[in-house]
Image: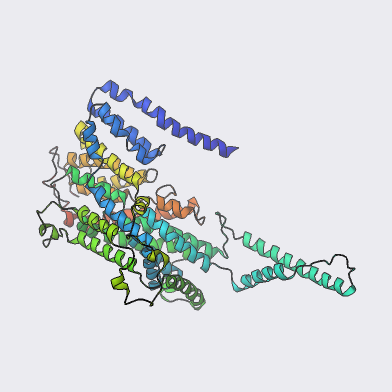
Length: 605
C-alpha cells in the first residue's frame, strides 16, 4: 500500500513542477517590467524542469524557443539560429564513428585485448577493464561505453564466480538424478520382491538427493545478493561490486579527457567559443593535454580506492600472486581468451573503422597544434576550419566506403578465413538508420537550448546583473572561489543531469569571472570537469544507472565509494589546475579576449 502511495506522490511532484511552478513565478517578470527579470523567469523554469526531470530534457530545452519571443527578449529567427551550431557537426561525425565501432564489434576486440594484456588477477583485471572503458569513453559517449563494456564484464564475472568443484559435482549429481533416478510404475503388474527392493532403493536415492538439493539451495540462498544474484562466497560478491563500480566510474572519468568525450565538454566549448570568439587557446589538443593527466591520476587512485574497499588492496598480493590464486587467474584468462578467439582475425570493416578512428584523432591534434603550423593553414584560408570539419569529413566517408572488401582485394585471401554474415552483407560501413539509432537527439536539442539560454542572458543583461551582484566575492582568495564553485557544481550535478548543470552555471560563472577580474577559464574549466563528477547516486548519470541494473550493488555501496572518488577528483582537479593548468592557459593574467567589467583587483590564485 505504501509503494503505490509513494508513486502517486512522486507523480504529483512532477505535476506541481510542470504546471504550478511556472504560474507561481510568473509575477516576477510581470511586476518587474524588464528583460532581466523575464530572462531570469525563463532560466528558473527551464532549470527546474532540467533538475527535476519532470519532463524530458530535450522537451525542457525547447521552453526558451517560445518564451524568449513572447517576452520580447530575442526574435524567433535569432532563437532558431542558436539551436544549431558548429559543435553539432562535430557530434554528428563522432556518432558516425561510434555507430561503425558498435556495428563491427571493434570495441569488444579492444576491450578484450587490453584486459588480456594485464593478467587474470582480480585487481589487475579490474584495472584492465577500467583502462579500456576509459579509453573507449574518450571517443564514445559515457552511456554507450558503459552499455557496451558491462555485458562483457558481467559475462566474465558469471564464469569466474561459478561454483567450486564440490558444488559443481553436487549440481551434476542433482541433474543426473533428475534424469536417471525416476521411478516408473508398471501398470497392471503386481510388484515382485525384487522390484519392491529396487523401488525402495530408488526412493532412498531420491530422498537423499532431495536432502542434498535442499541443503544446496539453502546454501545458495544464504549467499543471494540484493539484486537476486547468487554468489558462491562473499568475496565473489565483493568482486562483482568492484567491477560494476569500476566500469561506471571509468566511463565517466575517461569522458573528461576529450572535448567530444561528454556532452558537458561539448556544451562548455561551444558556449565558450560563442562568448569569446577571439580566444583560440582552448582546442582539442590543449584540452587533452590538460585533462588527460588528471583523468589518469583519478583513474589510478579510484582503482586503488575500489580495490581497497572491495578486494582488499595489498601491494604484496598484487605484485606477488599467491599460489591459490593462480588457478583462478588462469581460469579467468582462459575465459577471456576464448571470448577473444570467437571474434576471429581482424575483419575488413574493423580495419577500416580503426583507420578512420586514427585519422580523425590525428586530424584533431594536427589542425592547429600551436608549436608548429597545422593543416588548417595549409588548405585554404586559416580559421575557416574547425574540429567539426575533419569529424564530419571522416564520418561522411563511412557512408560511402563499402562494408564488404572489394573483389579486387579479397581474391588473394579467398579461402583463408570465412567472413561473418555481417561482413558479407552488402552496403556501406554504416547506414543512415544505424546512424539515427546511435544519435542522441535529446542531447542535440539540450545543447541548443543551452546556447539559447546563454545568448538570452547576454542580450537581456541578466549576466551583467548577476556579475555585479557577485563582485563582493573579490575579497576572497581566488583558490577559495574555485573550491566553492567546484563543491557547488558537484553537489548540483548529483541530483541534476550533467549537461543541464553546466548549461545553467556557465553563463553565471562567466559573468562572475568578468565581474571580479579573473581569467574566466580559471573558474569555467574546473566547473566543467566538476559537472561530470556524478559518482554518488544511481540516478546521477546514465553509466551509474546502467551498472546498477545488473543487481550487484546497493545505493549505500555507490554512495560510500562515490564519495571517495569525488574527493579524489576534487583534489586532483585543483592539483592539475594549479600545477600545469596555470602555465598552459596563462590563468594568472586577465586575458585580452575577455571584457573587464570592473576595476576590483582580486587576490592572486
